[in-house]
Each structure stands twice: as structure tokens, then as C-alpha cells.
Image 1 (spheres, rainbow, N blue to C red):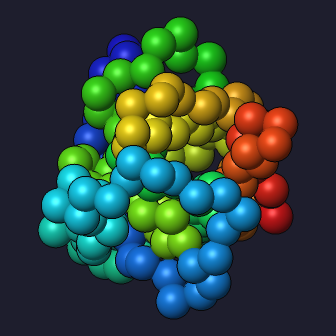
Image 2: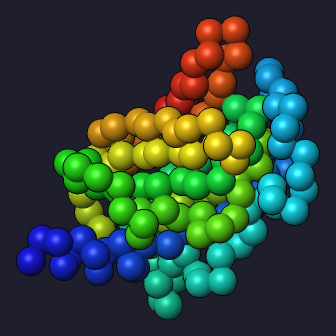
Amino acid sequence: MKKIIFLIAIALFSLNCAPSAGNNAATTNKTNTTNTTANKPATPASTPATTADGKSNPELDFTLVNKTGYDIKAVSVGPTGDADWKPEDEILKGRTLANGSSLDVKFHPRLTGANWDLMVEWSDGTGTEEWIKLDLTEIEKVTLKYDKATDTTSADIE
């Protein structure tokens, strides 16, 4: 039953993406992400991020900002405690979150669990990064950053 509820919740989960007009500068540069066809910025989802009545769960909604210097080809969000990432956890659905862009992640009103895991996959195929047990009831913004000197990806949580 828990799995069915989770699958329904994920099916109802959607996002609203929009490139930010903010600072596009980053501390690192990627040399092999110049293919503009493959690295199109995320665009608004064809399905609204909120329910038909315009409501979402503001307790869980957050903004994800990419200030890594690299494009992101996949973003997955799933409840903490699930052992594996599932295809339905991925929310970009073939779009790219370009460096300097942000997206608003909105949860269906019925989703109430506080702790969620986040995974990003880089457009150049160099792997993934994960952040586990994020209490989204306390988070409004997650800014991803990359330090080339230490080869470390971090998340500033606000």
C-alpha cells in the first residue's frame, strides 16, 4: 500500500521551471558543454506545477539554483528512506538545468513527508551528486555550487 501511495504521489509531483534572470557568473567553467542543442535550459513544464485549483504544498516547495559552472541533465527528488532512485523521481524530464538557472519545485498538496533526498546528474556524464535527508519543511532555496580546486560540490541551504 505504501508503494502505491508513493507512486501516486510521485505521479502527481510536478515542477515549474524557469531560467533565472540573475547572475550567470560561476567560479568554474566547463570546456565540453558547448552543444547548445543538448544543453537547452529548462523550460516551463507542459503540466502545471500545481493542482487545478492552483494549490501546492508550500511547506515542501523550494527553489533549486544551479551555480556550479556546469549544466545539469537530471534532477531527482525522492522521499528519504527509499533505497534506490526510480525513473519517476526525475523531474526535468529530458530538459537541462543550465548553469545560472533556477527552477521552482512544487509538491502536490497531498505530499507531506518532511525529509527528501536530492540527486543531480551532470550533462557531461561525469556522474552524480546526492544530498540526503533534506528537511524541506525548513528549506526555501537550495543553491548548488562547485569548487574546482577541491573538486567538491556543495549545497547552500536557505
